[in-house]
Image 1 (tube, rainbow, N blue to C red):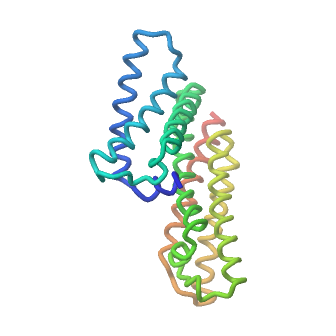
Image 2 (cartoon, rainbow, N blue to C red):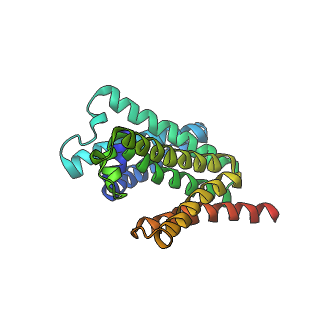
Image 3 (cartoon, rainbow, N blue to C red):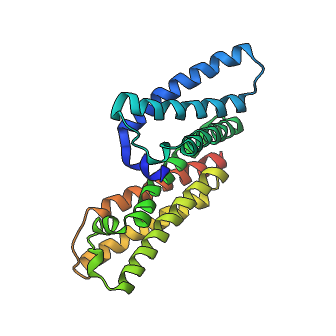
Length: 228
């Protein structure tokens, strides 16, 4: 539910999160000057405080109500803070390994996974809306057809989401190329369906090209850098 909320609130939420992070990491910088607290703990604490500030400012500056359902209880608030703590620690782990192009690769790989996660959540929680985006009316299909559509599309987006995440963690270009092959394949067979079988054209073709080019660029970059 947390991830679903963050997917739907969009740019406004990101603006509030940026404010929270600016405050939290500035304070963390001051703390580092006067204490011996290690970097990894500072990043973790700053991440936790940033999320706490973000959800607080979301209420005070934007909506005047707890829009995030998961933040309406003490347990929910605690899980938000814990997510920020883990995220801050993970961020430190990423940048402490190699502070060069690999950080950009990892960042873009994780961002790509996050984008695909939106599609996964759509197919899990609101399959009717997800199906309509592909031109299907889910209720008009047979039970078997609905089952096939939901399971196949969910698996499709979930697998590519995980592949990209594994690529970001391991820096193995094969994971990124695996994602690119899947979406380039979807784009190619989309064209075949249009020109060979006379199916209708849709804008999904453009999305398939973009979803293929992104991980392909990351994989090629890794290959070139490794060759150097």
